[in-house]
Length: 448
Image (cartoon, rainbow, N blue to C red; front, side):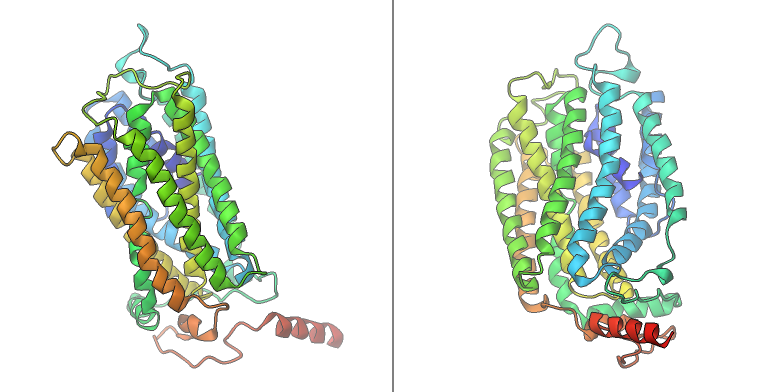
């Protein structure tokens, strides 16, 4: 209801507006401030974009709202990633990631459905069009709908179960969250990097994990399609995300296949998907530039004979996105079951992800470079190259670091007290195996 609806609005291209510059600048500021702090993330983007409809010179407000949203998003996503990877057993991590991604993108599906319903009749500019409801931008009703839904979403975390009460399906208890001082927390960050330096090989994969949104949303969806087609594209894109995350999660949880083999299999699938998507997309991208499609152009509609193949490409883009993010989370989860360590890992993930997003959205906002042909093509080529580079860097990490089961040594921060001292792992501090847990419960039952 919060980041999911943000995705629905962003997926329209240009935040639902005609001019992409303001939205791209807001996204650049958003990602630049992403890793700072978070909680109240929901309402800001819909509110700010509706302000542009009401007052055309409210661009600075939209950009400021992007900064607030970035501050809000950091802690929210770090906490989410830590809990999502700490709660499941090792055999269920793909399932949990897939469930999260499906729920998260149901928000985008709901938001995209609202947008499609509101804009289904916005096909071409007519005599009834006004600056507030131009044919290629969304009306205030869409933003109000998003705002109401996100405000509801803000209240949902109040229903969460205390992590201290969580017990996994194999009987093991989730490690209770610690509440150390900020100095100890920073020290824990250093300990995480010192004891698990192989995570550095994942940083390029993290960096590029949001880079492709700029080309997909602005240079493809916003550039080629009118608002009705953009809204429908947005809907099927996020539906594809649900299917993609559940499919790759199912593969990653196949216990009949060794975990290392599953890791290499998912890497291979991602590599194939990257080339399929971008070879296909190249044949469309080479035929247009930013200058060849002015903002007031009559763009492609769902009735156009070319539409079917292009929306199919957008669906495959959604599949790739979900598979990329799910695999990245799963690899992180294969490195540890310790919530504190996983919080640092997911913090690295979101920080580098947001750094990449900030750079590419800013590049799009200033319409760089100046050469006509390269305006869209350079963003496209950079997306393709960075995705391949991210996979190349991740391969040695998978080879050297992913094991068939997580060991006690991988949960080093679980043995650190609030003063920063790391204790030796003991049976009392390490999660017991399923067999031992079952034996303990049986003994307790017999005694009673």
